[in-house]
Every structure is written in C-alpha cells, then in structure tokens.
Image 1: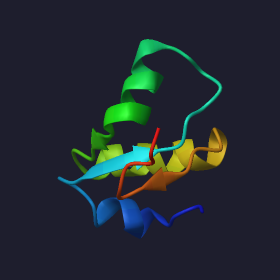
Image 2: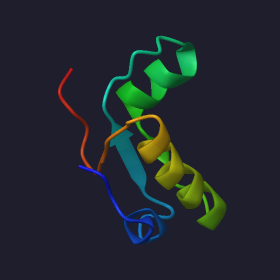
Image 3: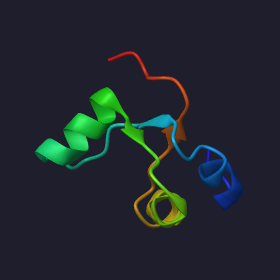
Length: 65
C-alpha cells in the first residue's frame, strides 16, 4: 500500500518498517529487519519518494520474518 506524504510527516520521530527488497546490501537488510525512525520533514519526503520510485511498502509494525 502506497502512503501519502502526510503519512510520513505524521510519523516523524516514530519507527517505520518496510518490505524486503531485491537489494541485499547491509543497509537495506537492516532497515527491513529493524525499521527506521523518520527524523524530520526532509527524511519524510525522501521516504515518500523512495516508496514510489523503488516500489517499497512501509508499515507501522514489523513484518514477521
């Protein structure tokens, strides 16, 4: 499910999780397993762009591995 920019800006300071992608680099694997905290408005905008450009889905609760 793709989210609006408001979804991301409303979660500044909170942790989000995402689906596993085809990239197996350490950063992508870590974010998939441990989530990431949305730091500020710029970060929220970046995540919103990434979900669209890279086909990433973000969630508020971790997905069972």
